[in-house]
Image 1 (cartoon, rainbow, N blue to C red):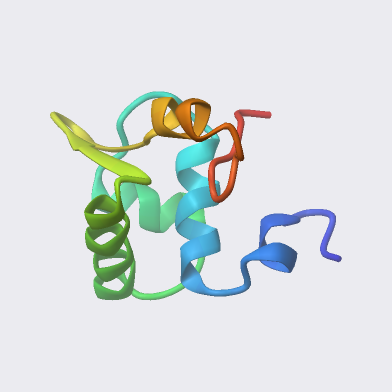
Image 2: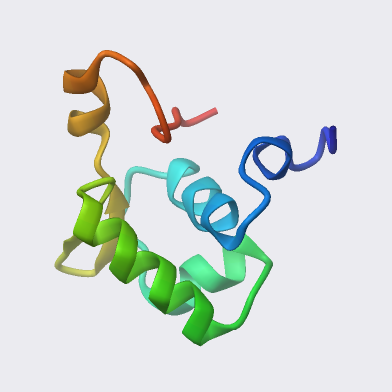
Length: 86
């Protein structure tokens, strides 16, 4: 396990980097900021992940960018791919 990036141990795909970036804040992040904070993948790859996660409801597209859908996490009762701010 990479203690500096524990999400990559559980979700090694680019999804993990995107979810980890969004989990670190409750403020909306634009595409470039998600890419920068996630630290992996191409800008177009991050865009594809965000579009897919918005389609599943895990991520919301809001004015100013994207946020993790924390309310869906609470309603599910499972946590699943939903992460908490450290």
